[in-house]
Amino acid sequence: MRLRWTLTLAFVALAVLQVALVVPLAVRSLSALLGRQLDKRIDQQLVAVDTEAARLEDDIRHRMDELAASQALEDVARDAARVPAPPHVTTAASNLMTPRGLDVLALLDDEGRTLSSGHLPARLGEPDDPLFAVTRQPARKVTPALVEVSTADGLAQQPAIVVARPVDYGDRRLWAVGGVRLGQVHAETLARLTGARVEISVGKQLIAAAGDGGVGPVVRTRAVGEAATITLLFSRADFYTTRTQLLGAFMALALFGLFLSVALGLVVSIRVSRPVDALTAAAKEIAAGTPGVMVDPRLASGELRALVETFNRMTTDLKGATDKLVASERIAAWQEVARRLAHEIKNPLTPIRMSLETLLAASQRGPLDERFKGLFTESAKAVLEEVDRLKRIVDEFSQFARMPKPQVADLDLTATVQAVMSLYAPHGGVTYESVLTPRVKVSADRDLLTQVLVNLIKNAEEAMPQGGRVTVRVQVDGALAVMEVEDEGPGVPAELKARLFEPYVTTKAQGTGLGLAIAHRIAQEHGGRLEVFDGATKGARFRLSVPRLG
Ligand code: ADP
Image (cartoon, rainbow, N blue to C red; front, top):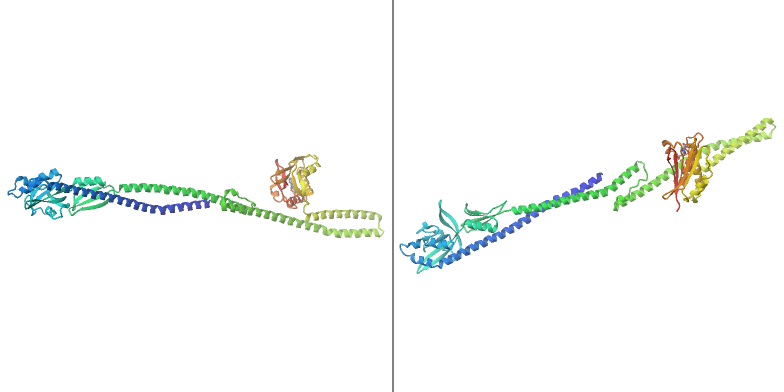
């Protein structure tokens, strides 16, 4: 479980790290990109400002050209020399200015004195230096200039775009200097063209303003000669909106990625940890003493599957080795017991036999009391007989201790069991029942299997002194042939089960405790096993299983 969380956390950490590294980078380059785009757009708007300025200049130039060529101006030039000047000369500038859409117009003599002023009639007869300076400009050059106008607060300087035109009459030269004052109309036009807030100012004084500067504006200024400054404030609102939208999309993508990596992390970690957990659990079980625990290889794939399969092979090998070890240890142990027993019993037998033989010989040699003689001979014979029997038993036992390998042959287990069962008839309340699957074939020693069966039936009978049913079964279980003997006795007590197949384990007064030990050994010699289970009712069920043929 811990492995699973560690792996998932590692995935999440990796994903978070990735997002943490990528997001600031993305934000920075995104902002830079959007900033560059904004700059480009502003540059385009500024070109529009310049175009509009050029259009205004052209406009002024044309109007002034038309004025310069007009008959009206020629009349003024002609009459300007007269003293006093006729009234139409002094009012000429006003009259000529308005219809031509100009709002600055001064007629100056060759020394810069005002003959007539449209925008400041009060200037009459006085020099107008800023406007006269314009006459020094190259011909037809439109220039910014500060002109004086009268306002409610007195005289004020206002920026204007003007151009000067000479008007010659005879040898007199007059100057017509006229143009357009920069003001609200221009601010509005530029604001409309650029979408920015436009402020026209002279020095620190704001003359006109239009449009909305929006959020965190980018400020650009344009000098109108030395006369004025146009300040453009381009809103960053779009920039911020786009950036927020893109960042939102990016964050959503990053979150999705994060979610995906968490999910992926979980899936991968489950795939990795499941077999590892199963392996750990299996290893723990084996360590706790359950041999042969397997892990399902379908839990894993790739290298982990190979690991699980190797693990399974190892546990199988280990179980096989352990089983063999245990079996051979047990065999060795009880063979040792058998050998000792045989030795112990055999030892006194030889002297007993020798002395009895001597006695017998002596009694036959000399004349002895006839009755004693007869009795002695009889007794000695009986002793000899007993000794012979003892020796036979011991010989048999020794023989068993050196039990030879089973003589295996292909065998019909069903037929073998059937043949044995035909010898049993109900007696003393005990009945026999055979449940036989036909033609179950094994490779085995017929006599040894018969010995096991007879032994198990004898135990079953002894477990039911009051009578009952002994059921004998032959069946197939996968690759195994199974022979079972079940009774209705009291069953095998739990504490006895573990030691049941060891030699000399018996609960019977006359028992040897060898029957099951021998049966168990026979089962092992056949590559099979003998096991004890609880019966269907309360009795015991002994099950011999050996590899099946075919
Ligand atoms: P013995 O029969 O000489 O005691 P075994 O090795 O055949 O030796 O049996 C060992 C012991 O196992 C018996 O003493 C008995 O306690 C127990 N046992 C064997 N078979 C059964 C059975 N069918 N029901 C109950 N106990 C049994």
